[in-house]
Image (cartoon, rainbow, N blue to C red):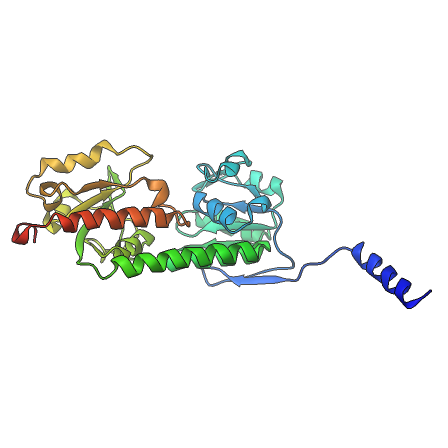
Length: 300
């Protein structure tokens, strides 16, 4: 056999052999190192935002199970569901035979995560607390799923857009802002929450930034005492919640007097995904409107 034929034979032999992917490892948001013998091919997502992150990182074809309200992108709605993020169906997860579960630290119950660990299923904990963490999450999930190229590009595009927003808005005059998640109970976010970072990005000043809980309940009296210049609400869907306009009962409130009662759909500001920059861009525009309405000392 000539040297050329031997070379061709070796190439054909190698082409028919299985390719074994290298081990991958990352450190999750709980500080634990997650090691997989090869990139995950059967991933279960335990939060809607995680589902969206996985698809954005190029790992959508590796997701085999999701929780309820995983409605973006459209392909996610066709996947088997394993309960809700606070009410996980452990048997459904086991039936899917995942080689990786991605969980949400502040949304999933510790008891569920502990059980998954005892079953020997690798669990990656995701907990973005800043806008920079969203890009990092994309890269980590892409690495675990073997879709590094797509994830790296998605993270790059996110950081580039984020940088543009920072340059434009962060140093603008502060606008005292109340972010309302819900009305009964009256719920907001503190400065450590991801939305708190969005408010800072836009030059806003979160009136409840110093509170200890991520999503604390507050009283209407506390809001009135803080006297925000803007009230920003999200609600549950695409429609402006009726309770946002209840602040008009207090005409002495700066936000009411200036008609700075703003709505942003929750899907683009309350999920820890690349779409949060859509919500951030909208919030920045709204706070710019509030600045434009200032008339001397009347709103100081």
